[in-house]
Image 1 (cartoon, one colour):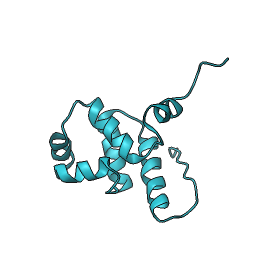
Image 2: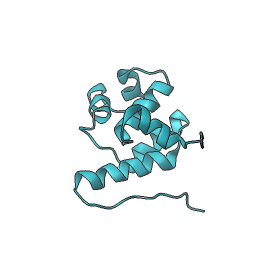
Image 3: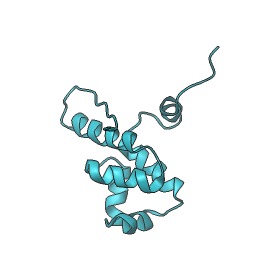
Image 4: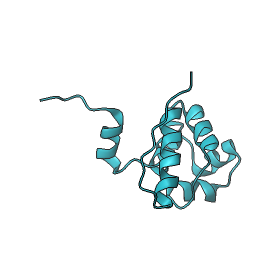
Length: 102
């Protein structure tokens, strides 16, 4: 039996499908910030942070990258989730893959 699983699979088992909303909660939690503190750090309102975390508000790839970088989490994963959420909202059945440019 293989007991190794990747981080994404482990995370999905804990909280369900991985979205930018769940990534945002993980980023904020890892930095030990309130929604108000997170908003201030990135120049957005507490309400917007709440809306992002509930999946009601999308973010730009640039903001997704900044959040991941500041939280010392994967920038690639953050941008990929941000773009995937946008496709899903538009009901475009495609999967996003992101790689760092060389």
